[in-house]
Image 1 (tube, rainbow, N blue to C red):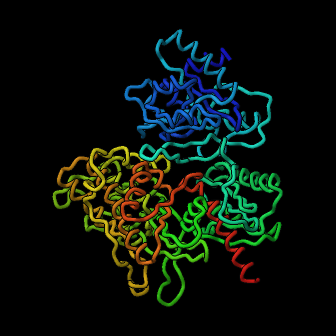
Image 2: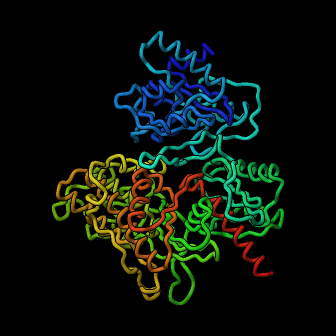
Image 3: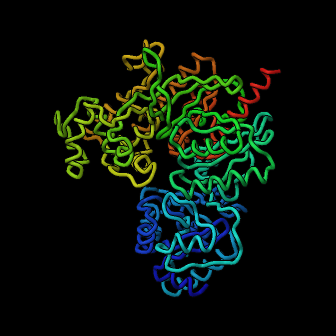
Length: 603
């Protein structure tokens, strides 16, 4: 162990076998070591977790609250997001986009010994330097964490300089859980639910048949119900490679084995091309189990309602980046597919009534997936919709993505005019991306949510919510044409006027922190007012909040408060993440209720 600590002190990268799989480890105070780890792991900017030996060291690196310290030192010991201490001797590359750092304390004897040895050597060479080690999942980006010794040697050979094995088998691979404590309320919010929590059951409002929810494409989990309990798996990863697909199969079989139950119904996402859809089809062929599909954002709604044991009607604000949805029927019959992401839904868990009441005004994704990776495309598409085709028009400042993307930017208006690979979306997450790009904060992303994180970090939080909500963001009739009469279409939240307000402030020379704050505040007030109006119209008092946008700390704290001020009861996630990690629970809860209704109708 002393030799291993010396390698880490010299800037080496070590693959360490732990409790639920391998970690990749390096000196968290060494900028060169962290950069090299990022290069080898193919993870350019996404934050890395740091393990420290004790609370004293944690306090030297972050402003820890009593609630955060309770989680850090408790029996589970998850990764806890804590606010960085300015000037703390952590490498800037550990969490370059965030004012917070993910800290955890040792949770195995091996960790204790390693940090003790490393700390002793460190104190001899660099006095007053904290013993802090990057402890990130032992995998390449988008792959499951490595489990066995041979697997780690094969998959991590080009990442790690040396391996630390032990002879205890790991039966089930499990990543570290990630959570934070909301400053205003002291409530815990999960960002990843895995080691120490999964598969603890979520207790449902009523008992029912066994149902399996297969989960989404990204941040996948799966859920199996038994009676009035829903068992949600640990974080499985993104279902975009054969390794994660194999992990999904492992956990589906494992759950049925340990719970001694087989599902009578399997619920998948509506998207026809997801790997989970293939899993469902394979299960049908092998076992003959019944299968049904549930749209992504309605699954979000059912998940948060199931957590809160809510029975009956409620509004749901499902706010995220992407979800495969159906548009309204066109004249002449048939339905189009569209990309949802900023949705106000009516969901009745008693009758399974589903209705899309409103959504963000749709805008273009020029280049499809390319627009997700390059948010400047979204910003320019919004400007094009506002009749600004070229940079500097009407005396406005040059677009921040020029000259880096000069050629592609010049070609973009032609794509938009001809609607070539420009799907429409109502995504809330993509609106964050467009605003971040317009302010020059993020033109190209390397991980999901990066642009939104940078936009949130840029805010001037000294301005109150109501004082900052200066951009119009009101509910209006649908602007859709050529389909049905507008009164029969969902209402739209006027996000174009909000973006026009951003453009006005940029042209007026307003600062980025003020504009970022006004964006957040205006959108929160717009959503709260929309919920107030539609809740009154439909006679409901509860508003369920779900989707990856609810991981935004400003939204997590200020949107529920804004709803409460308007006499509404917000329902939030307490046991699962608001991101897609909750989808499988929503699918399973929906499927169980559907079977119960069919049984009662038969009786």
